[in-house]
Length: 356
Image (tube, rainbow, N blue to C red; front, side):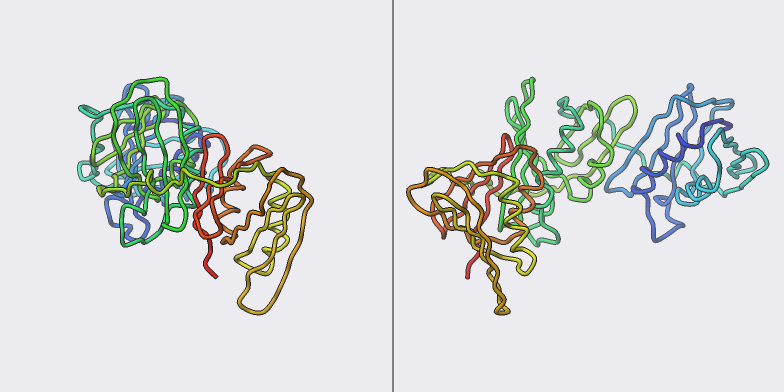
């Protein structure tokens, strides 16, 4: 194998790929990146068995086709020390040589036959989606996904596939986030759960339209520039639709920025607060266990005939407000002791009240 490639192209690809490699054991095959030079395309693959990424680079000068398997972190560290411009990668005597001008490096190779294979898309269900929209939608519900929950299905995001839309759902049992993505295609009803680790990588990678392929064990996102896969959480997600309240005593539109400012002012000294929405103002009061107190009030004219009282964990509302773009959001409320719903377009958050 012998190729010429611009340093920045290879460097950017490797930055994404090393996130998928084994970091603790440099001798593990999964600490390596598989490099395939064939038919004027350079394929770079990395996986830790749970998630994986293949990057396709067309802007490359392949002088000799070939395949190699080399430690990803070592190769990336070498590139960091090189200048912009073309670099040469060449295999000789079972070593990978990296050259640029008068600089030369030699790395040992592993047997590429030991590198894990990527699963085929054959016989899998599929749908097309704008991957940037998909990644942004997952970002909105990401804070609601639990970590290390013994109910393992809650450690990931549910993709609930309906006839012509999908619901993305996360919950930590104290709150639930849901985002609906409408699709102009007919789909077969299905449910799959993506691990939180995979969602982290999706948010970094997805900027183009992709075709999603899936079965009960794996999800693959693919286009001409990359292929991403993740193993799925093969557990049953709770019936989230039963958790979402449908009966309310009051509904009101609230100003995002003013509401956020009021919460930030009081949130300096407490993790929880009571919010009272009156007919002409909103009162924010701290709930604290150390005898400290804080309160602030903002003007807000509305048509309420009865005060709304929320007792909340600050973070739950901050996570919602920081993930919406609109200037207003909707509050659906039943009682102080009941779960309430915040919504903005296709994004909703169901929040349990804080008990004091």
